[in-house]
Amino acid sequence: MVQSTQERHFHQLLLDNLARLRRYARVLSRDAPNADDLVQDTLELAWRHWQQWRPDSDIRAWLFSIMHNRHIDWARQSNRHVGLSDEEWARMAVPPMQEQSLQMRDLSQALSLLPDEQREILLLVVVEEMRYQDAAKMLGLPIGTVMSRLHRGRERLRQLMDEHGEET
Image (cartoon, rainbow, N blue to C red; front, side, top):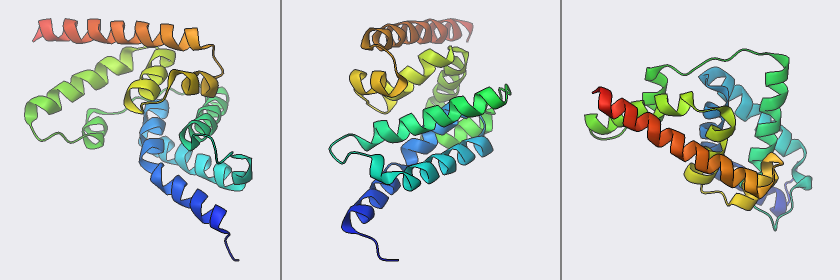
């Protein structure tokens, strides 16, 4: 089967966003095998419906929307809530120094205590550098709600990190 230039370009964009999809899937599912399944399912759906993507739009928002919706579908089917182990979090980010590793572990634990809505917004806007408008559109929320959840999520994350710092 001969691929068109447009299909090859789309395929390359999927590959370019694979790491981001994996990160987002890990946060959504909190379980490495389920995250891999979610990425695979997202890529399969995107590839099957690639002609629905508008080349003038941000493919990240389109892919993350597919993943977010698949995750919601899966959550409705199963109310299982599995967290990542410390080892899995450590494998996701390997900082060069032990102190940074401990800070990453503390941050991961603090993130896991946030409500899903705040954690998703933080990941999309802060880590993936998605614009508020794109995150709002992807999640089907008003932009004010995105900004509010982001603010509350950042504040709660600061509180959790400060509380942990006082313990040590």
